[in-house]
Structure formats: C-alpha cells, structure tokens
Image 1 (cartoon, rainbow, N blue to C red):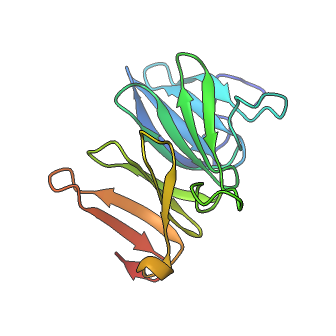
Image 2 (cartoon, one colour):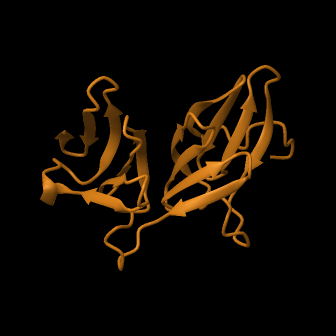
Length: 173
C-alpha cells in the first residue's frame, strides 16, 4: 500500500492474536501484517522476497497459528508451511517434495493446529500431514488411510483428550 501504516489488503484471509494488543493478519496475495489494535496502524508488512530463502514462502496466506513461544506457523496457498520467528525475522519453510515421503502432503495449506504433544497438524488440499517436533518429518494421511476426503479444511484439537477432529471435502473424521 502507499501508506505503509495501513493493512496491505482488505482481503483478509486469517487473523490471530500476536500478544500485547497486536494481531497477525494474513492477506490474499499481499503477505502478512502485524497490526496494532491500540493505534490502528500496521507495525510491519511481511512479504515474499525471491532473493531471500529465509523470507515468507508465498504471499497468499490461508492459515495462521500462534505458538506460546512467540513464533507463528503460516499456511500458504502454494508455498507450504512457514515457521516464523519474529525475534530473528527468520522463516523456516516446509514444502511438498515428491521425492521425500516425509515431506508435507501438498503445498496448498488450508488449516493448522497444534496438539498437546507439540505436533503440528497441517490440513492441505491433498491430505493431512503431522509434523513430528523431534524429527521435523511429516506423516501424511489420505483417503487411503481412512480420511473421508483428501481436501482438509479444518482441524480442531480437544485440549482435554488430545482427540483431533478433521473436516474434509467429504465429511468429518
């Protein structure tokens, strides 16, 4: 935007708390904004930089998930999942790799959730992937494994039982 204190776009695709009166705001095609609810101004615009492999992977954001340690998981339309550390301004990207069975199921990420064991659940357009926080490898589940549909749109973790509910293109799991 011309005024760098306003939201990058009115097409808001995701919004989550960032702490201290701030919000992370994901947009359709114009990256990520850090919005100050007290001043009504954007503190930071973050976009993909093709020259920097440690930048946001892609500018269309479908899902955001804040973590207690202050980091942020970001699900993108075509760039997989990013893990962003606001203190260091560094991104770690996880993408689908057809040659790696332990990679993300698909680069179109629709939903994110953390379970009580610290595993990241990632709903994609072609399956559900679960990131092991110790090995940083994904296990992927599809219709072949019992999901009603491969397109995963929502993930809900029951914080009491750690049961995970998945909404798909063909029903609930």
